[in-house]
Image 1 (spheres, helix red, strand yellow):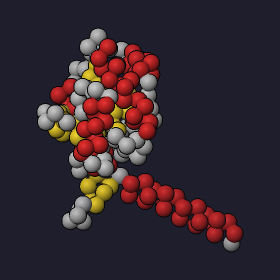
Image 2 (spheres, helix red, strand yellow; image 1 turned 90 degrees about the vertical axis):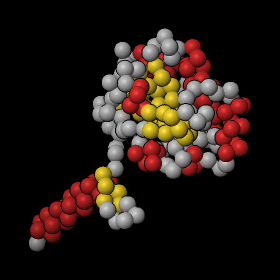
Image 3 (cartoon, one colour; image 1 turned 30 degrees about the vertical axis):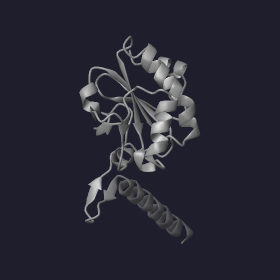
Image 4 (cartoon, helix red, strand yellow; image 1 turned 45 degrees about the vertical axis):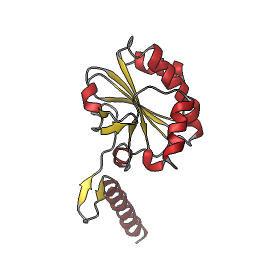
Length: 181
């Protein structure tokens, strides 16, 4: 009797675990239609990004194929983001062309407190790297950004090679990109 009960309990737990796994791969729209949610996986193509930058320019991640990409997600109020952004800018200024790398800092505008704070941040750090705005949070959802900053290192074929959560420094950027070559 105990063996049967234990077996049924184990099967039930396995079934629940499988259902939860499948359920996390889907999201319901407002109309109640379930659609798959992208989960960024190492070695797979990075999900498409089509946004507008802080300077009003269109940005497409797909257009960067052939280059390595450092894809960073951040917000102006985030202390680790504030700590790492000068390193991102220095890397962009000093190494991006030499290493055939594009450094892209996607601002999670849906998490920003106001536009003034965002623009003050950009001016304060004299940021010139491309900064697409994720206004409605769609890209944040597709990339499953839970912690900021989060950075993805993408190879020239558009495949995700690394996901780094937390602040990065210039040396880390150099090492991650060099390991792609």
